[in-house]
Amino acid sequence: MIENDYRIFNKEFLPYIKNLVDDYQVGIPESRDSEVLSLFAVMFKQMGSILNDFLQNVVFGLCSSTLEMIKQDMQQYPEFREGFFRLVQNIIKNCTDGYF
Image (cartoon, rainbow, N blue to C red; front, side, top):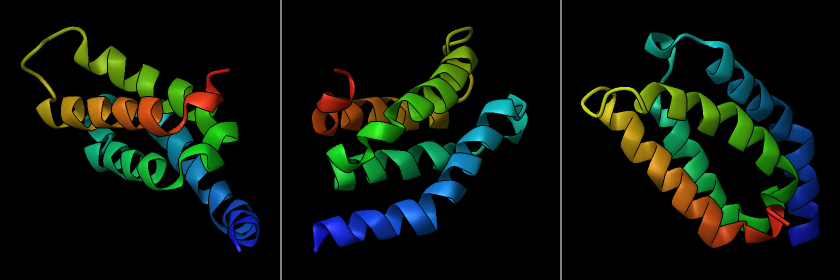
């Protein structure tokens, strides 16, 4: 059953999710939505290692873009900070195989 779910996810949802990451990455900080980080945090929490192949795209597209936003000023973008750290936490907890 899980194998079938994984194929359905890859076929039906992954292309749209990749577009979401790409849009987030190229957008200016004012056009980004912190809910994107929350969405991916939940995805990594629920799906874990199923997303190993997608981890590099997320780290490069979401994490690096968000880190550029939040590292300059500790007062700006508090909602992005929370989503960013939740995403990183869920990646570390549930997707460690993707690092190796």
